[in-house]
Length: 262
Image (cartoon, rainbow, N blue to C red; front, side, top):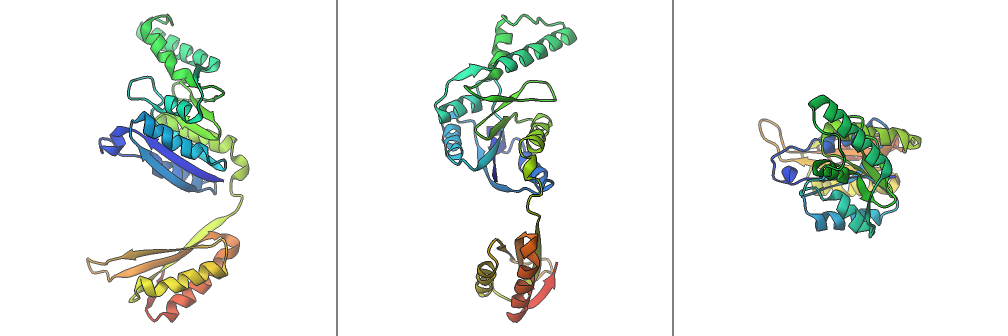
């Protein structure tokens, strides 16, 4: 299954905040023998978010994590955009309403505020439980304000302290059957003195001879005492990796440059 990631927030695109979701989601997936297929960054633009979600909902094979924009302030658009993308109305989820009310009551006890859910500020908080009709809630262990899921899309807050445990819970619950289903690996070497164009036929040949293996090339222009070189590598199922690696290494040496295994 292909896993996708959507990260939402003007503060990310403006550089006001540094994104930490991408490397963390890659880490969480890798620890379970899974990998990220694609990622997108979007600002707080409801129409653009809806269009991106419409694209990802159209891919039945995708499981997508969407971080950010599920609050109730004017710059939060993700819940509404998800409804637009699916042509579904938003509805207050009963379990979400209960959890939000419990959180409001807890905060009232701690801070001397009112737990009356008819107050305007508390009615506003209930909006955080309005999801596209048919959604399921995603428990939030940090403060109990839930996220939601629908059609293999999992919507979590932008705060890492909330989002990451929620994503882990989905991976270890909904997708536990995919963990380490196909052990994968990667091997690479450094090739000096050979142009990338000269190595391209070798890369194409390895992929043709070992279906399921992907070959990659990472050129470096050099500098600071390091000569220009290419990192050539193979990645894919362990059952195919050693054979593909041997073919790549032998082919790289045949090109006449200096080979340094990593």
